[in-house]
Image (cartoon, rainbow, N blue to C red; front, side):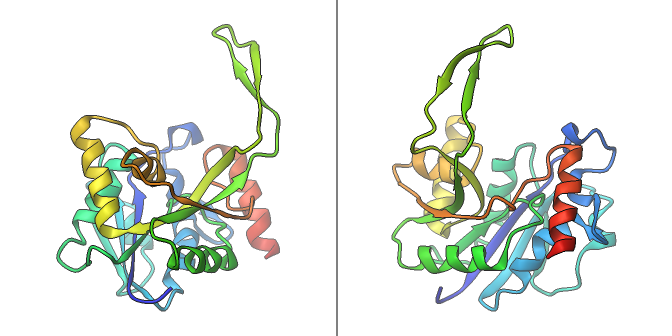
Length: 229
């Protein structure tokens, strides 16, 4: 990828499913905090200009563990992921050009392989829309009825599990998220916002080790990968 690249890392979530008073992005993992592992591959990019980390207002954890880098900038995030990403994009409005690339990465994805990130940036550089890391769905999918029983099996052909990072041009991505916000539409990732705006993001195969820390068992899985790596 040529030219400048910016990043937004939404980190305002509480991670209630972890059952911890400490948000999941600040949990200890293999000698560091989860978010430190998540930021590390982005900080290693030579073309990365600024990484905006959107935390909750008054976040008491960030100031204690923020890696020492002049590339990092903290802003207040919002109630939902899409709100935090949009606030991060707005924080870049005086420095980012509309055609600059913006990379959005989950604060709770600590196992992003450098080679996957490099492949993503290489593939989207020649694409007019942008794209995301994703994994083809491998397991059989079941749809549940209201009483917790299976009511049908969903064909997995052509189904992909969305990962992060997701990379799009600054102008179109901000416009897509602004439009969703104005319409009161919830989008669960940046690709969904771009799809709603009429774009078809590129799917770039990524490693299944790029897990998102969501439940207690995920810490053990991530630790095994990071320590083995």
